[in-house]
Image (tube, rainbow, N blue to C red; front, side):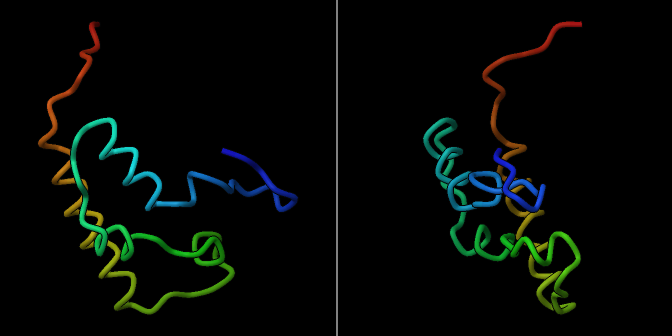
Length: 82
């Protein structure tokens, strides 16, 4: 994560498509590109400088639920011991 002059994170964390590529490379799961696109929003929306429509917000939420559902089916490579 990088911080630009605005003090907000920029770089890879803002690029959901890049993160989708990492999931495919590391976990072997191809996430739906349409879902990744629907999840992505501009930094202005994330930081309240710009509004999204209700439809965009609901579509993003639905896509995120699908992506999280796909990720929840992945067997963890590592287990944590307590």
